[in-house]
Length: 413
Ligand SMILES: Cc1cc2nc3c(=O)[nH]c(=O)nc-3n(C[C@H](O)[C@H](O)[C@H](O)COP(=O)(O)OP(=O)(O)OC[C@H]3O[C@@H](n4cnc5c(N)ncnc54)[C@H](O)[C@@H]3O)c2cc1C
Image (cartoon, rainbow, N blue to C red; front, side, top):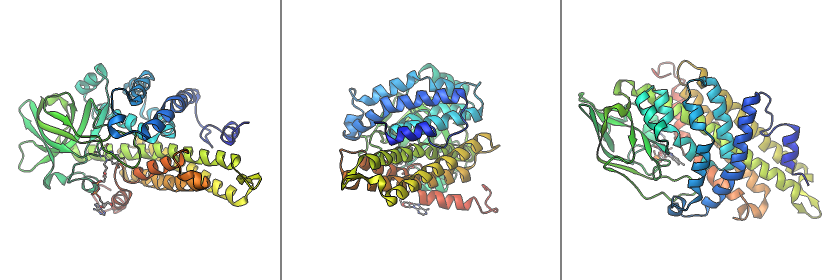
């Protein structure tokens, strides 16, 4: 018998109230959905049950996911100059929603994996771009430090004056890196390249901050133990250590005088991406609840017959559509705007991840006792959604930051 989700997909569209995809976008969505359904979702479910060490072991299915994703050619599409920013943004929103519909931990890993390439393009460094395209691997964005988590979000430019844990020293035509980044770096244990946002000693009176891409096979780079955590367990996370790492100055993407703007751009990109991805998780949770409500019989009839069950499903449905509406609006706005808008991106990230957690909680409740068991997908989705409220900035802190951008006397507003 046809599932309720498929019935509504045929009546509306794969993602619900979607009306504006052109032919190319539709083909891209079909390709991404197939990948999410056949590769990402089963891999995410399997990886969730493993230890962090097993997740990154040579025989782990994670490597197959990376290889199959590379075959889709997304890196080449994003690196191409022929794709204009708005088209790129629309492809990104299709891709990230589908990937996270499959598994949000894997979606974050694949998204973060593109960071060095996206940064090389954004900050227009042809040397780094060519190196990355010649030797494609997994990337990471390394910014959080043991003593600077929320502090980075609150005071993106300026934290470096407060005892940074990682410093790049400018030394003629070389860069010398010492210190460490926090255990939270997504892909830290598996990355081939790190996009390092960090403090620098550039010879000025005070420390500054800069962005450098670091090849992770450089002498002196080492990786910490992969982190064991409650949700998004398919996403490998861990410290990155730098012990007198020397690289050429060509790897510098952003000099200290431009760091503030670069930080705002990257955090905007990351927060906008979070909104797109977690719309996918909300949709997955809603679909599971919708199907279960049609299948589960209590006292001889399906629970969907109860008006209150229908009302609860409607509540989830409208929240998923709210997530998509806001995250797409923000993403397309940022792509076309003359300067990145953290105000817009934080609004998307905070709203979507809070709504997604609400949807995941209601969807779990729909399964009754079964929602709590590992035999059903709901408890995993709840754990994955919970992590998102801290990821890329705690929602409380991002809200304070967003509020500060509504003060017209704030120079960043
Ligand atoms: C799944 C996941 C993926 C991540 N991926 C990456 C990544 O790829 N790269 C990377 O560099 N980092 C990454 N992070 C790190 C993430 O950005 C930080 O965890 C986050 O910024 C919070 O920092 P913290 O964990 O050190 O918490 P803290 O900063 O120690 O915060 C602790 C508590 O204090 C509160 N708090 C702190 N400062 C303030 C303030 N000024 N005002 C009010 N309340 C405050 C916070 O809200 C929180 O409740 C990831 C985190 C997670 C969970």
